[in-house]
Amino acid sequence: MTEPKNRVAVVTGAARGQGRSHAVALAAEGFDIIAIDRCADVESIPYPLATPADLDETANLVTEAGGRIEPVVADVRNLYDLQTGIDAGIARFGDIDVVVANAGVVGMGLPDPLDAQVYRDIVDTNLNGVWHTIATTAPSIIRKQTGGAIILISSMQGLVGRGGDGSAATFAYAASKHGVVGLMRSAAYAYAPHQIRVNSIHPTGVATPMIFNEHMARVFEANPDSSAMSGNLLPVPFVEPVDVTNAVLFLISDTARYVTGMTLPVDAGFAVK
Image (cartoon, rainbow, N blue to C red; front, side, top):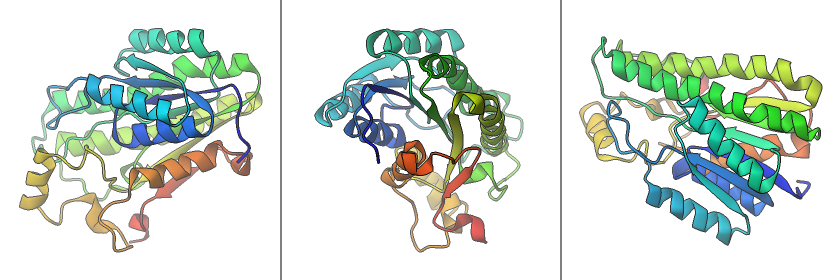
């Protein structure tokens, strides 16, 4: 990879899990990091979300990797707050080169087909939050006039329907992650004249706190065949955050300089069956 200089990356959902992995790896590649996270729970979501202490730890790890970081507590569902945080990072580091729209939530194990609140919260985070992230960052990349890369973290549930159980939560997750593909393709078309490449990554289950928590442990214990990971073709229950990060690093690299509009699975063969 060509080593970037004076480059800036935005990562949402950066306080832990995949987002932290992406932020630290990008810092090691020489990027300054604008790290966005809500750092608070969402009432309808049945597991704990990241905390301010988690975001502090990401900041420490980014610094140890040799990068600078602007930690921003903001909810991707709130366009104004997100724009304010992005602007603060731009004021410190300059215009943006890379965006990783990673923030997302899931509601597995919530069986109610009429749970309108969880449906709204999942779609608002996973789909509207991704649009907000694109809308608040793309003008900066365009202004810099050096091209760039926008990577949207979707899911294998953005490419297949397996795992639907009729609940509002699973419908919301699949619909939102499919919607991310539509955003990606539209953005790839819109920003190509500015040499901005836009792609989406589609992991199977990833070993993060979204999966490893007390609520999900109860769900898997009660329904051992209900998890997305049961569909992996390779004999692994989960992929690791670094596996998704490696795909991010590929998509921002010169090796992928003509790759845009692509849906890239990191799925241990989940899509084959």
